[in-house]
Length: 565
Image 1 (cartoon, one colour):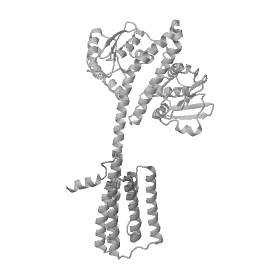
Image 2 (cartoon, rainbow, N blue to C red):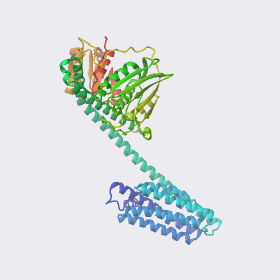
Image 3 (cartoon, rainbow, N blue to C red):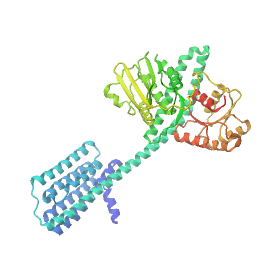
Image 4 (spheres, one colour):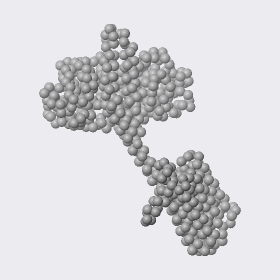
């Protein structure tokens, strides 16, 4: 057995019957014990050779024997006792050698060694604290003895003092360096595990979201279709409450999925680039009020919007992130306000800034909880289920857009969330479309091609397109879609990102290589809402990207932007 094998055998002594977490601690204690035993034997002999002081040699060898005892305790499967003994031996040794050698050695430098060892070898908070406290007391005892001379150091000549100092100092520094090295290695190991776990979680969330969004696309599509029918046709009036409940429930699920994706990206350290665009803020606020009024109706709540004079009609901002901020704050207000009360949203200009206030009439937030409302998973109790992710995501996005969010609350009167953002106005104002939730723009006579391997998704999107006046064609793969497009010459093409064979991005690239389709609007439609997938599809040549489940109003406005009116 060579030296490396022997060292490996000793370090792993006693770990065969232990779980992995405890085995790591045991290996750490064994490693430290081997290092300190070797140093005691080596430097004890060197000091005796240089000074002839038996009072230093015998304690050093006793200390080495005690560290061997620590190894035996681990072999006997008594890891906690071994760890405690290791720390105790080191503290006693510090006090003893500090007393007999006085200020010749920088024994207090061993505090770094004891601190690092305590953090690595103890698994409970109580033992870590106790070990650190004992180490501090040991160093204090050494310092007191230095100045009070309670235990006078042994008499030595100048040459002997020089030898002892330059033998012990490297040993102490070696222990400190070994401790730092092992602690850093442990941190790197833990960090790698965390990175791997985070990556796996992100992949899981991404794939799960994609799988959920496809069936949710059908449910959300049907709920929107039914909602239009019950508001336009009297014969469906008796099922209107159920339809509004269905629409509200699916919208709630979509909001939860979006928040889970957002917090996953934030925790994963993904970059969140801003995508500023010019839009009509009054139209956006009105749109949000209309949508969330359906959810508010379930509790008899009225949403009131007040856009003050002086607030420009159009601004430049990241519309996507601002929309999610509004969604989260409105949904939060509806969750916590009293039944049959009012939720108000006020928008106003504040010099070079603009702000909006979302106020509810709920029980309010206790003062001691105001600082924690923006922490993840701090969901309060309400009739609506939530994840506790909306407010932390809102705070992150507001700060990303260069603003700040604050909350004011009076118990039993409600809470007001105030968002303040930089104000940027476009060169040309954006005119509001003026269409309500139920009003759609018809594109009669135009052809729309849907390329998606999911028949359910084909059905939902094709149904939406027919409502918008399109003649619809469907294809189940990229190759089939290209062939149909060559035959039918569609005016707009919809492509899913995940398809067997030719992927969505590759299909788009093929279309852009064909002169006849170089300028045809191609809209990517996918259950993957991650920015990486969006960038991939847009980079391949997509004109726009819509995430499933498809919102009919968003589809309508996207087509209005891409197609001639």
